[in-house]
Each structure stands twice: as C-alpha cells, then as structure tokens.
Length: 55
Image (cartoon, rainbow, N blue to C red; front, side, top):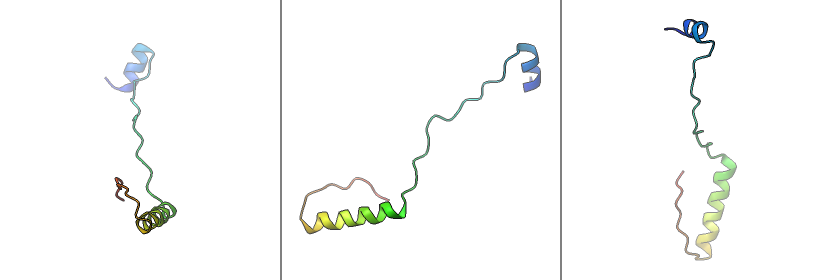
C-alpha cells in the first residue's frame, strides 16, 4: 500500500519518525585556539588536570 492509498483509506498521513539525536557541532578554530592556550597555561603552572577530550 503506498502513501496515497493509505491516506485515502484511513484519512491519516504515514508516520515518519524524526531523528532524535542531533550530531555534535564541529569544533571551531576559535575554540581550538582557546583550548591550546588553556593547555599551555595549565602545564606552565604545573596543575594536575586530566584531559579527556581529543579533537
């Protein structure tokens, strides 16, 4: 049964599910520069930080 027959017989449209999860945005150049600056400052001041994100 195609869409036209289904709509004619039932009076309803076929349910088309929408994707629920949006993809994450790409890291911009400004963000990458800021992340590198932060990393340098942390290493200069000998602060123990675990870096979990890799780009």
